[in-house]
Image (tube, rainbow, N blue to C red):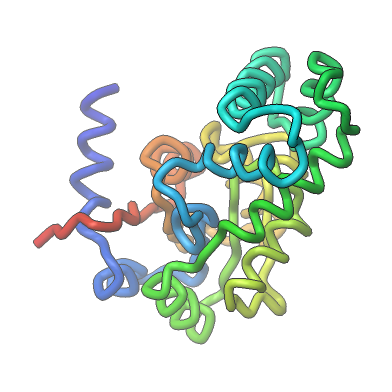
Length: 230
């Protein structure tokens, strides 16, 4: 397993904005991860979103306590699930286990989505890469995320991405993930079954974006910021 990881690192790590398009090679289709590839959050740790949820709509619960509740609820839901989970699964678990929150699952969902809107920002360099790819190749987005497809579309469009005609495949909608390779399989089928070797995927996760893509036979370029590779 370590050998496989090292081979992926060796073949994919030397990619950053001015090199990414050169890595496309003979591919006809370029796919992108969403979070931490095209957009990110205005915080070093994504769980800061949960703190904002508490400050926004849960005045009776301090942010640190709510953060712990939210993390534990997601962990429990994922442990019990056979496939991917949704934000609705998580917030339903939260209000069932913590009636002291005093809100409905839908209200918690709304608070979290609103907080995500406030926190997300684009990566300008990757926006440039995305637009370049969109002009030259068929483009699609593939995301492992508990947020719904329509929410991700809204976040991306708010951050300046023109997604007209761009398919978006989301694990929470499909019930399977990139990490297993299954979400890549669904994307390939709905893109008209291009040869997997004619597709390249850009993403920041070694496990989900690189090894997951490899399980579906898709080449992958690992996107890393703040790391220069000669």
